[in-house]
Image (cartoon, rainbow over the protein chains, first blue to last red):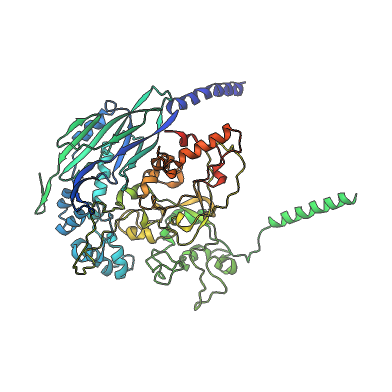
Length: 278
Length: 357
């Protein structure tokens, strides 16, 4: 008898379970983050004249999407505004990295030595790379002294930890502290060709074409460009018949609200003589 | 009556054959070392380094994969790892089952001068470990497939040669691990599990993809150790960071399965694009095995192929859907979407995602 009652109870719960699931996701939507671009004068090869050209600058940056609009994510917005952020240049400056190392990173907008291939020439010029190379060749690791060919290719394995992935770990820690207790629905990166990031299959709670739902999109980690850093916190309203594309084309000089976006702008400190100053 | 006797004999023969197949194998059979036994994966043996050296002494020897030698796990653990347990007890199998025991790593009759060690790892054996590669973390670290589109081409009248400085930087991107295949891999259609399997039988399809349709992937440690030999997590000595004991031994498939086998990575319009324009989900994935849907969502294709333009390939997705719907409305043989798919996939009902705006 008790088993029968249990079966009846369980069976009666199933429709509610389904309804619960259905109430959460009745469909999904893709949301795109479009690029920021800056206008530059570029020589037209055919005419020989300098012409303005939009150059996308938001390459390979991670964006996060959260349920609810700006009001629902007020805590996160406040945390982002109050966050103490160390810029890339200051991070390496505070480590007393050589000017050659900082220049190697800066010259191709790299955040870490994993950004691009370290050439023989780089090893000769940058003291940190030279030291790492020498360590590989001269100091045995697990009874192995690396042959020069491998020591050159594996130079990052002998770099000082902070110079190697310290900046990445700092950014991870920043994201961890910002997201404490908040779980993003998804994160995605902008590509380096079309300069678009796409959130795929964001769950929607209603298939009614008239109903829209709010989401918040942010890059969390400031994006650095030309002496300033930028964090966008944008609200999008989407529904089964309303898609969203966020064009981040405007770069304000100071923190302000642009449309449905809060933009946090910070002046980046400069590294001079091994000291980071505002 | 004779027929009945024949049938009984046949059943009897099959039963005997089956029973024989379940009999224990001869002790002379070579053993396959199992990481699944408790004695091999618990206690101090939970640490891979208890037996495996990183790197092994023979790492400078020529490699089977023809790559240049690098510090790697290139052979089996040394005898001392086995001796600890297998040379003791009432029946030390190291001495009592020499063919079976030694055959795990050696071939022929090993002697001190000619140890006759099998090539490590033994490819004919089932895989006992899974490998995890968090693409999302690596996407955060590596840079872009940067193209200096904004820089004009200089026409030099007089120039001097300066080799290193003028080389464009080689940004680390997906290509450090994934290059166009050198030879055509074994390929097949990937079963679209979420699509309704209704539709006509597959039409004749003679399509054969070319080698440039596929990208390879690392088969060993060569790409990993470039950054992970030591220092950064996970270092080469920490095997368990990337390798986990599988639930049971398995044969990893070498067949490359695709929903859209006809996609050519090297075609103009595709080749110049950054990988993550289409492989959207890869930047989000901590483990590709957990990815439920296609790595490339249909929305990536729509960006270029569902336009309201006259060029056929710019509206091909729309055209294919219309052709299928028209064929159904006119009660003609159902159109199969074979511009991107082979007919084995293109015959199925069109998924909702393809129609969505």
